[in-house]
Length: 168
Image 1 (cartoon, rainbow, N blue to C red):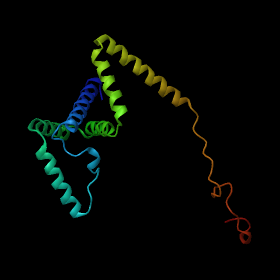
Image 2 (image 1 turned 90 degrees about the vertical axis):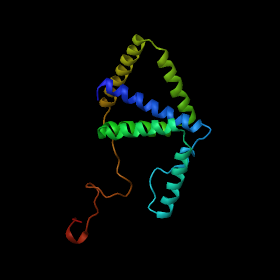
Image 3 (image 1 turned 45 degrees about the vertical axis):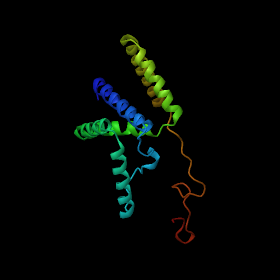
Image 4 (image 1 turned 60 degrees about the vertical axis):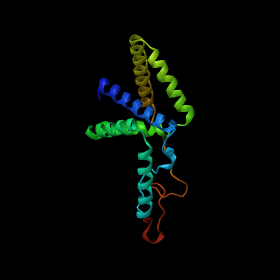
């Protein structure tokens, strides 16, 4: 993925995350994200209850938020699978953040917005350098030595069968 697409994708993630945060803090807000299951239940009664809860939450949303969500969903469906997964992973990562991590993200965004284009390019270059150094350091590490579990049968300590002359 090239830099322009990645910046656009990250911008879209920030927009969606901000919208999710704003929607949670609104007076007509739907239930908190912890109330929403991450997967559908196979129980038909639970699915009916969830659908009713979702319909009520949708009805409570302002028109502007409904429009934004529909446009976002339409754009996500139109994306290639890899890009869509990339954005969904970022949104899920944001939703899993604790308040301190969200506050740090907000401070980072404010600091980024205050930077000049030259400072942003320097920050990108420093990040890229750091990322490459980290990848190089981790590539040079020897592979971990895995010890067999106590009592595990391996090729070197297989039990012997006395009647067959040592073969198991």
